[in-house]
Structure formats: structure tokens, C-alpha cells
Amino acid sequence: MNYSDTWNRLIIECTQAQRTTLEGAYYSLRIFVGTNEMTRTYFADPGTPLNGVLFWGVSSMVIDLCSQMVSGTTTRETTKDGNYDILNFLVFSGASGVYQNTARKLQILNLLKPF
Amino acid sequence: MHFSSIPGVNNNQTINVDALAETSRTTLTAIKGILLLNKQSMKYSHFIASISIIGLSAFDTVDDPDLNIDNVLNCRANTILSFSVGGTSAPNGIIIAMNIRPLSGGLATQTLFSIRGSSTNVVPFRAELSDSTGYLTFHRKDSDGIWNNYPTTLALQKGKTNFVLLQFSNQ
Image (cartoon, each protein chain N blue to C red):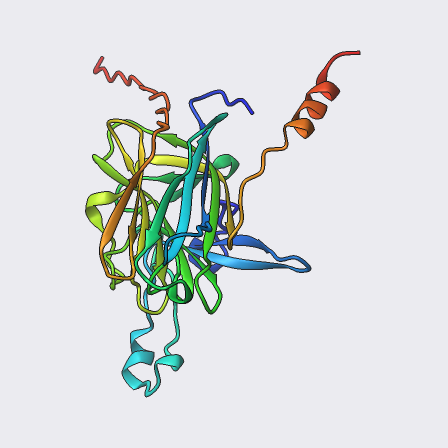
């Protein structure tokens, strides 16, 4: 997708991963910017697998955009305000992964070709 | 999330969010600015559950980001937008997608988003953008209470800055 200005298509994937030799919860993180993909970063939690949660201390989740709250309060963290524009914001909540369907993309491109 | 609000609804302070499940579709609400509690209710309330939220900033300038045409959210200094995903337990994964245009002249470290508990307001996860490099860094607090940092290696490109020259003359 092309935009007239410098827009970045950003996708963030953070989800459960599985490992066989070590104990504890395990997660992977990667981002996509435009058509570029970062290799996954893996990280573990020292907690037991049964207690493994990605977002510690969160039961009902709130997403804050543009800035963040000082943890434990409803006071905005004034030193980390954002300075950017966002559109087409999507959130998929739950353990899942990003799948690139290149075949589908090619089919769409074929439809755009002049006859 | 559609970054548009309606002046006649909640003092222009809320945004409708489409929430899709496997077999249903609902509409949730995101809030511009900081939630304000109804202090009169708090004063006479014996149960926290009965505190009513008048929600929303009292007027349109308290911590509110601007919503521009074409569903663009303008994140600037002194603004925040909060969206309660809800649920009874935090998910063990999340995928977030957006089109983003970083701008010049911001703070050195900027918040892209953060995850917060609605009842405790604990913030155990946040994504921050470096103004100078365009790189994102993710910060996660583990179960021992230790912060861990996960830098990324793909930079976000800044948008163009439009300069407007105004000339005033006294003729």
C-alpha cells in the first residue's frame, strides 16, 4: 500500500512460544515495517509455566496510545509523550501469529493488470 | 479502531471500537484523555463498584489527542488515548498493526503504546520509540518485577514536515 507521505506499515507480534529444554514461560517478539521483517527475539520469564503470563499484574487489559500512565496511577507519564500520527489501528488479542499470504497478494496484483 | 468521535456523544470524548469475536461483533469504547471519576459519588459511596464514571475529560483539551480527517490519530505532547480491551485475564499474546508517521521535534523517547491493568493501573509492558533512530524498544516487567528491554532492528521513517510561511505586513 502506498501513501503520499512517509507512512510506515507497522505490525507487532508478541506471543507464546514453546521450548523443550528449559523451564519457565517463553515468548517471542518480532515486528514488521513495510515489507521488512525482523527475526524473532525470544525471551523467558523466571516464573513457572503455570504462572506464565505475558503481562504481569494485568487482569483486565487497557491499551494506552500516545503516552503511558505512571505505573499504578492514572497520572500520565509526561516525559514520554508521542509525536506521531496513527491510522488503521488493529489489535488482535490472544496467542496468535502473523501469516503472510504471498499467493493471495499476487492474485490481487494480477487483477490490477490491464487487459 | 476508528479514530473519529462525535461531538454530541460524551462531550466528544469517546471513540467507537469494533470488537470481533469468532461468532459475534460488538462495539467497545476508547477514551480520549484521562478518566475523571464522579467525586460526588465517591464521597457518598460505600462500595467502589458504585462509583460512577463521568468519564472523560470535562472538556476537549485535557490530555485529549486530536482526531484528524480520514481517521488519523494525532498523538502529540500532553495527550493520551485509552482503550479497555476488557476480559478477566490478560492474553498471552498480542498482535498490533497500524500505519504510523513519526514526526520531527518530539521527545527523545516516545510511547507508542503501553499495556495497563484496568483495576490496578500497573503497567508491565510498553513499546517506546526513539526519536533519533526510529527504532522501537519493548520493555517488559517479568514475574520477579525486573524490567527487561527488547530492542528492534527495523527503523520507522519520519514523515515530512510541512512548513507554512505567513507574512504579515503593515501597509
